[in-house]
Image 1 (cartoon, helix red, strand yellow):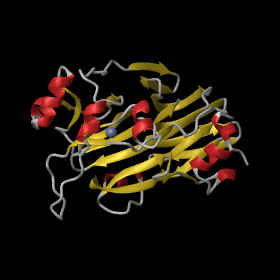
Image 2: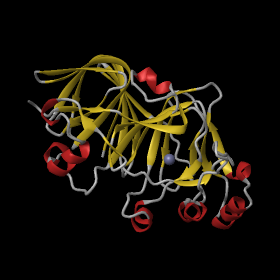
Image 3: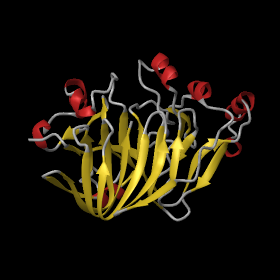
Image 4: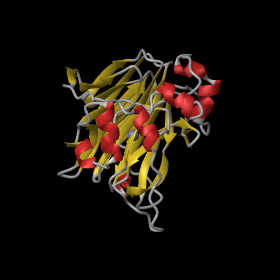
Length: 315
Ligand SMILES: [Zn+2]
């Protein structure tokens, strides 16, 4: 059996802010408070399990340990990426993630966390928190200490198809009514800066990490929104979402039949709409909305057919 394409079993995480929109991907979610689908993960808090082929039943982490050849033999102690779908039924806390060096020193060797968001869907007037207004460190600390959140936080209206690059150090929050595909460095380190003073059913506030947040927030904020690069080729519209030091992310909208050259160590794919086929030589896989899979380094060329959209990422 070949190792060309590995499909993964999704992992679900219930969250106080979660909802039930992940059902629209055909998932059997545990409750109406399901906040995250970990689609491709090799982290102690969630390990994707392979659904097909000779590696069926193994975790992505095990494959990374023992079969580095299917990842093009690239170096690194940890699998570098984590792909999630997030259903924010309620506002998420305002947060920031550390850089690699800070996380390594202060979080038991964790990686930093740069992430990005593709907005799969959102409510009509939906917004998110992206960036801050403080001009320097002194002003930042003062605004935080005085709880001047409305002055500090930048709020941005969003619509379906928008894309945000969120480097470590960027203050951010998803807000209610937002469904997002998130691609990030393989890390689970979050510093909670502000939680809208919400209390849980027992009347408790959630823990905040004010000092660590102050340490890692980039000030002044640099807005990294930019014009996306769109390319029309035969059978497909290709949109470059981001090319950064941690990952490259693209959207492929297939309409018909398209050949793709593959020269990356591995490619993570998430079908976000429609259905179709992926063909590699004689092998053929049916793919549909909600599928997540990895194309291994063995594949030098593949063919996409049908009417669907997928977001691909690689290092
Ligand atoms: Zn985040």
